[in-house]
Amino acid sequence: MDRKPLITKDVERFLTDIAGITQFTGLYFKNLFKRRFEGKEFVNQCFRTGYQSILLISVTALILGLVLTIQTRPILADLGAEAWLPNMVFISVVTEMGPVIFALLFAGKVGSGIGAELSSMRVTDQIDAMEVSATYPFNYLVVTRVSATTLMLPLLVFYGDFLAFLGSFLGLKAYSDISFQLFFTRAFSDFFFRDIFPATIKTIFFGFFVGVISSYMGYFSDKGTEGVGKSANSAVVASSLVIFLLDLIAVQITDIII
Amino acid sequence: MAKERIVHISNLAKSFGNKKVIEGVSLTLFAGENLVVLGKSGTGKSVIMKCIVGLLEPDRGSVNVFGQEVTEADEDQMAAIRSRIGYLFQEGALYDSMTILENMLFPAKRNPETRKLPEKELTDLAEMNLENDGLAEAIDKMPAELSGGMKKRAGLARTLMLSPELIIYDEPTTGLDPFTSESISRLIMKVKERYDTSSIIITHDIECASITGDRITVLHEGKLVAEGTIPELKEHPDENVRLFFTKHAMP
Image 1 (tube, each protein chain N blue to C red):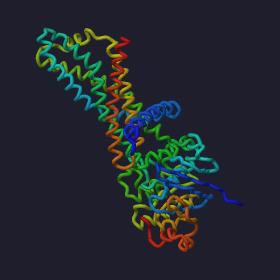
Image 2 (image 1 turned 60 degrees about the horizontal axis):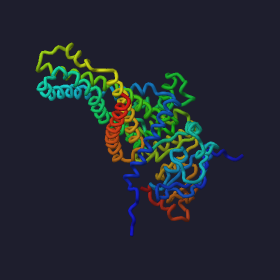
Image 3 (image 1 turned 45 degrees about the horizontal axis):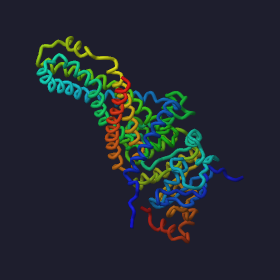
Image 4 (image 1 turned 45 degrees about the vertical axis):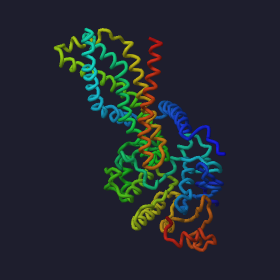
């Protein structure tokens, strides 16, 4: 009688990927400090991952602020707590919704792009061509991309938080004659540094892991056009799962520390 | 006086999963020589070449390049070996996000010996290499704008930027029309004469093998089964070897 293997292929692949991503992270730090930094390519990647995501983040952030305000205002009005609305929106956007939603969007747009691009470079032997000309492709392709996503996501989240705040103000303005100054004062009335610090730290981790996971999926892609699609897909799925996992860990740590 | 050995492979074996691709292959490339490795698609020709440049790690055997054991080389030693090797990939492997000039400058700007040269000098060298390969007008084009033959020429021009002592050509004429194939084969000979390189050419194109090869070795099912000139191989006792020459080009 045939015995079923204890570890199925999917489980084996999952464990291999976890080990691979861990090793890949180690290689990133090794190359970041050991090899010459590709400054020009890093700036180029910052432009592609950061600047080219601005429109997507802008639209989403404005809508997020508007929707949150329009949905919450009647409930708070019924409780006579409408004055708390700016503060409530701001804290929920800055501490939780902003980092997670913008990171997921970033994983969808930038992560899939990195996965597909590196994968198609693998399929067409471009990475091997860099390797055999002793140009350290890991340094040029991976270190620059991971560094760019680590830097750009927190900046995009700051920018998105501000626009969500603006969207919230516009949403409230439609129902009342609140001034921006009053809205601003109320938003910051019960807001402390401890609210923004953990959120910023976690967005740095989100950006780092979107870069590492997407680069890993593309760099070690299967050959063929199917491999390109799979890499782009895996980059988004795995990055999104890791964002939620990191968020859970960050919430627990913040809860213990603060 | 004995000729200098550039590449010496002995008893090389490589498997992927349960599939044995290369079994006990031994070959030597001498200085100034063009060695053709002839074989059907999927017989493991590219695998041998990838073992030479350290892209694949063999399961068994020794790979000695420029007197150094590749299988024992660390990252920096491997980089030193690779900087003396040019590798022309089947489709040229041009970096498709860069222009042809940027492709040419990419390895030169990162090589320890050439990266200190002024940009103008590197650009002049790139222009000269492209002109020698008949691609002067393509310098500002993107790889997607080039034909298959032009991509291979551009790939070769990029390889020559670092003045390699050894060039590996991976199926240089595959997918090209007979005229372009012949011109690429002639270009390989021109490069050998001009730059005094040693080369390994892996192909299944008899025409290319006859133009470029000083010595031809035949790979069949992961093993080297014959070696000699084309007339010698046409009379070889092994039918698998003779078959190459009765069909014009193997699939």
